[in-house]
Image (cartoon, rainbow, N blue to C red):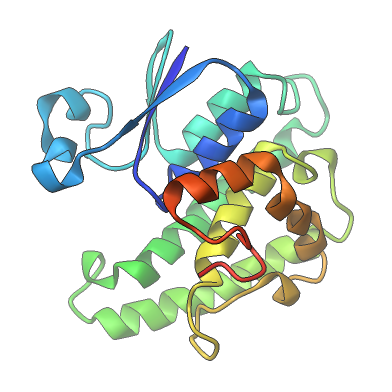
Length: 214
């Protein structure tokens, strides 16, 4: 049994989708952010920095979004095995997504966490983000199996594209499926998946998760 601690439209979103795709038993706990739950000793025992998400597993807590994606992928046969020739590439692009896409996106959302000059930080991060998405899109021209369907990495990437589509056109970080000629067609079918629809309804989001996110 898994227990995911989550907040709507946060980094827990893709994990909520993946847990539904996997179909393993799980429960979810909506974090009471307004009343300081992120700083509570109980939550800090799961996530030492008090960030979202955190996953309780039979073997103990797992935190950091990419780590949880990887943990679930390995436990449920959704990642190349240790002896699979594709293992290295899968790990490389999973952590590329975490460090070179997710992290700069957080700098666009919260530039004040990085430096006092927020607008400059956000603009620089947005440019880096688009350049790195272009790098990943080029790789997707010949898509490996782990970049297709309802595998963990496509779900992770779809969550990021969902957020980027929420920036207004003309914003440096605005990016849609149409901007990703190779990756876009791989991610688009996820919008129609029942797991995505269920999470969107629960989080009060439009069902057009990728095509018209907000």
